[in-house]
Image 1 (cartoon, one colour):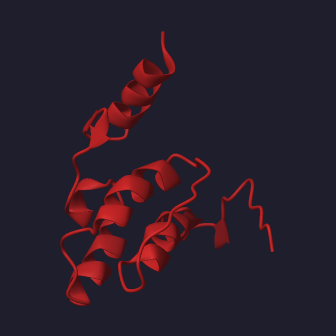
Image 2: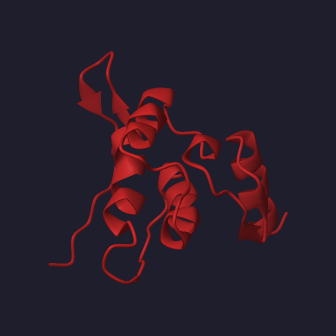
Length: 103
């Protein structure tokens, strides 16, 4: 099985639509916790920006991400929403295995 086939299989198991390019545009389509989606929608955001469309699914899978986009395009949410999604509110802890900073 090729790496693309593996990615497609994993993403489809997570309820993502993946055929080469990400085709998700709404936050409700990413598989984020419903409370996160509700909060994002309450802030007035329903549609993801291009940087968010490309990075949120990969972040939810725990992949390393490097992204570059103009100021005001939602990079913080693109990186932060998958992290917030990993917080286990029942155990009061976050399940992040690897975090690296190059600063």
